[in-house]
Amino acid sequence: PEALISFESLVSLHDQEGALKRVLRSHRPRQALYRGWPLSIERYEAFYDALVERRVKLVNKPYQYEICQLLPACYDVLEGNTPTSRWFDHADLDMDAVMAVLAEFAGRPVKVRDHLDANNAQIIPADADRDAVFRLVSHYLMERGDRLTGGLLFREHIELDTLGLDPASGASRRAIWSIVCVDGRPLMVLPCWADVDPTPKDLPMPRFSALASRIDSRFFVMLVARRDDGAWTVLDLMDGQVARLPATTSARAFYSALDEVFRLLPPAASMSGIFPAAKDP
Image (cartoon, rainbow, N blue to C red; front, side):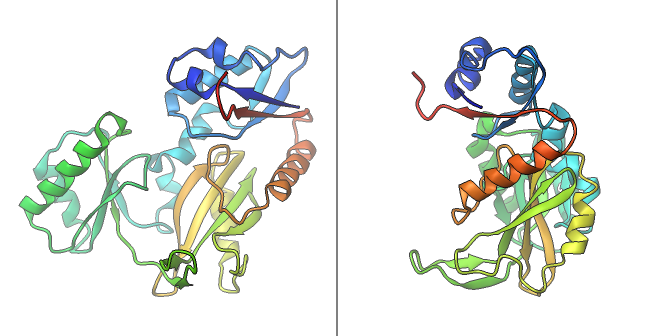
């Protein structure tokens, strides 16, 4: 069974009851999979608890959701297999502290972002002086505003291998793949481009499988990439319930694989889908 939720009520109006009015209370425990837009850590926890009251339990507990949504929460597992990162647990712009952190990168370019969002990072060039760093970080803080999550995070900027040009846009296609993982094991590998080998010969699956086994999450996506020097790296982790999948992904194959796996794995319970409504009533 599936149920639509009101994303607007859940996030903007903070109305749990209104958001979940289509989710029926169950007479027996049910396992559920949410697929929809990302939620903040706090909103996911409230969402999770509200569903538990209906005897519906999402596949990932709140702490497991956080592990794959906030880089600092999983960095201890990924370190050495992902770009070097340092962070603050606040958004205060202490330039002495910032310059001390940047010195650890030994003159390499760095991205500044928050704990959550890798898509809106600001690149700090390797030769940026203190004034330039101040301008770049200040601009980033102003742009993020109250959307900034956790605090400032500084991450090594790496160049990725390319797979030719996208015929539609003419832009370079970056060598990125998504590894969908369930209970610590890879379930499928999804290429970002339609005519790209889904499992390139040099993809180090044993290495990424070993990493996946150490992630305390039932369902997540590991974004991996080949660098321009041929080495492979983990770009990011995302909770599988909110991860954006490549446009080339077959929705039918994706959900069929998930349904089959979760149905077979303990606890033996029926699988439900909970999706945000495309348009709230």
